Image (cartoon, rainbow, N blue to C red; front, top):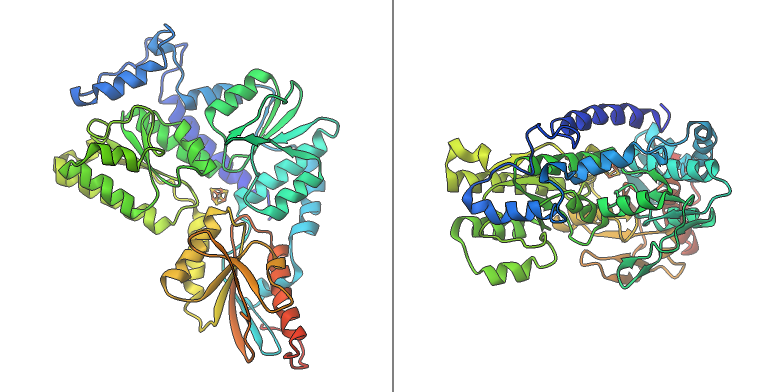
Length: 477
Ligand code: SF4
């Protein structure tokens, strides 16, 4: 199967789901259809409803204001909007990506027992790791865009994925990353007829509107799984529920998802979810609540009003078991507060868990069943899904090192790696003498070639230390 064929099938399925969802809402050209904006809400929700109407404050009829999802749908219809890649360029790009990103060693390990042994080092590879199809699709689309628009200036609104090597590769291809000044992206120098790529984790509706107005060519590589979360958020809006987003408030994907919500709160983990649920049941110190979530709620959020009806959404790269646990917690909380018969009117959940993230998390859990000296995790330091892979062995007290590139392993026997708290530290002599069994895996934005380079460094280091026995390489079959 080509790297693109599976995505195309899933994109088609998701497109049908998304279309079904969108057509459930009225369009501006059908003012007599029921309006989610104009619908009446309980008295306790009046403030939130007022905010929902604020979008129409310029005097336009409430019924004629598009929701963010409808607005995206309008923008997508433009002939300047490209979200399926460029067929004529796809074949050349596919072979280019195979040569740049795949690895013979990793392929051989996958074809055998996921084990490689040389001298007294044994490498055990997780059963699921590396590039997910959403990332592979996004990178392929960026390459295709470069080939399709050879003369035009191409910008990207953010790192296409959280991998420094891949982003450097795109920079080499003269794809310009939008400058950021004091936390704000600088769109000013983008001109009509330029090409702008939206990354795999999406862009806010406001950015899409701005680019649409500028008349640029937009290449949208947003993963369909991320768009599926936006559809869930739109459903919350229809239900007049507040979206509870399990994510990091400053992560680009969560910022984009929040832009599709009307009223939202972002919780980063089960502890913050417990705090919110406790407030729902017992009330509490509102000022403290607002201070705690000051960066993580929609404008005008009022915990006394906006937590009456909630729906769950998630950043696709979060720890999936935790997302499920947070969902269960809110469901139980609503059951406790309103009774089992009423729970469906106060809590909504739609399946938005991305399989790729779940599979990689399950695979490192399985890998930990082996007797390992440590686990090496390769992936960008900004990569949320890679950071979660590190958390799993950390919770089980299994030593692990998260590196973003092979060069973090030095000839002096040290390794520079990212800790759970985000700090970068150096550990000396991390590869002690004697037989070692090392588990390896990589995040969803890491090409296999980069994983191979890291493995090669381990063996190089062992050679430098003069510990390697003169044995033949073995891929266990
Ligand atoms: S991790 Fe999932 S949501 Fe994110 S790009 Fe990959 S497939 Fe898409």
